[in-house]
Amino acid sequence: MSPVPKVRLSGGLEICRVLNGMWQVSGAHGTVDNAKAVEAMQAYADAGLTSFDMADIYGPAEEIFGQFNSQCKSSGKDVPALQSLTKYVPRPGPMDRKVVVKALQRSMDRMHVDSLDCVQFHWWDYRDKRYLDALGHLSDLQQEGFIRTYTEVHSRSRRLTDLFAG
Image (spheres, rainbow, N blue to C red):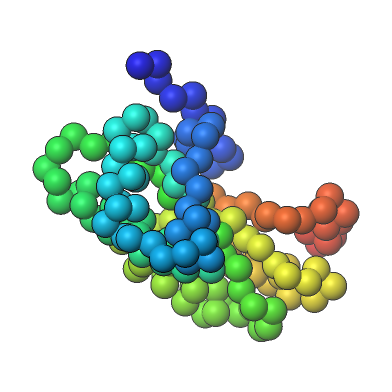
């Protein structure tokens, strides 16, 4: 079998070009059997598809990844490195550092990881400029090694003006 094509993101994180999306385990599509989900994740990883995309709002997605991650670590087998990409989707409100850290720590606990490979930030209402505070904290947390890289999702290019305005 040919190796799965990968791409390197800023910050050096290398992920598969094809991500294993975990929105389907959110519960919105019916009941999820966690054991079967973990079994399917193992089949994907065995095939070289080691990058998993989830979110803090996708029901048990982070917990299921955590179960799979723990299973891989405790198996004693030579398991390929997993890449975990999760979305941070806060409710609009104050975005002080402790709010951001608490949410990311919850994701880390669920996923059974010591740091986050990639945090994809989603904000509901860009008229509320507090998202800039959250992005500032994400930048600081990246510098501190809490997260490897982060990105903003569902944004328009005109938001770049806000980001680079100072």
